[in-house]
Length: 331
Image 1 (cartoon, rainbow, N blue to C red):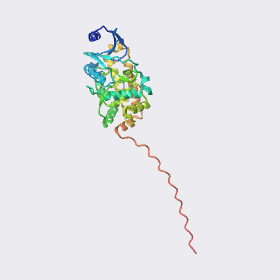
Image 2: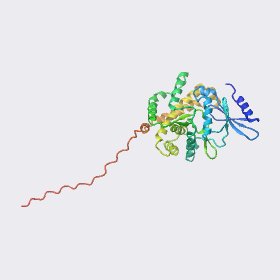
Image 3: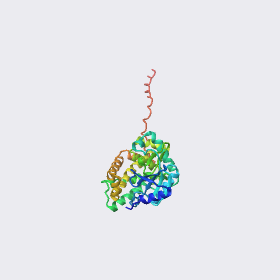
Image 4: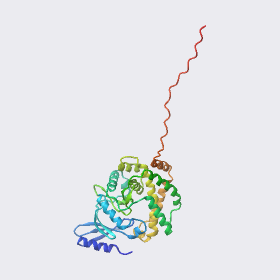
């Protein structure tokens, strides 16, 4: 793997007109993140894009990731883009805490997360398209082509997945620019608003997938899914759609981690992250929801075939008095 950091730092130094000091930041499951400081007090973030990631099918092409990063910045939710490089991008340093799963589950953060998604979705369209079902096809093909491990029983669920996709296609909304990979660490709270970073899998998509993916990554229960749905949409109607996408997020990203583990083992070791264990965990969560008795009603609801509530019992009828006995005939 060629050294990408050195040339990128040289270009940043030339752009800044003064020396810069890099500090490696832990985080990021694919690309390299470096904080860049100057003696004058400047602070930026340098995102080094590893071409092996997109080559392995684990992200969009690097040039398009940069395009989408610029467009997310224009939407007011992504980090500002200061300098575009061939395999890197210099970004505004967002000063604030990176969220974790507990923070994303906190009801106090729900509206901020929903508002960040609304800003992104209302912004300029991305240069790429995204479907979790087509990504599933792509990742499964990669596993077959390279002889990578697929969890036992994984492909047995593909007919059910086809039913889920058919249901979601019935009333599919217009696509909007989506992040599509909103694990908690891709949210930063800047003190006044939630910001969204890392556009490695970005593309125009169903907004309900964005919410379902957030819910999957932070392990939401049904009540939390409903809360986020109401915060974003203003009502509960799309909650079943979001719930189905939660399941598809866990199911499909199972293979993302399997491919990463199999094709980028050297990078995985450097990241100090167990991609194999994460794949197993994702699949276990997907199976939990695929075997839930509530899956069928969710599919029916999304199709528009809601199961009617049980009919109430008929109101009690007043008793009809018995006919009086006939009077005796007069003598």
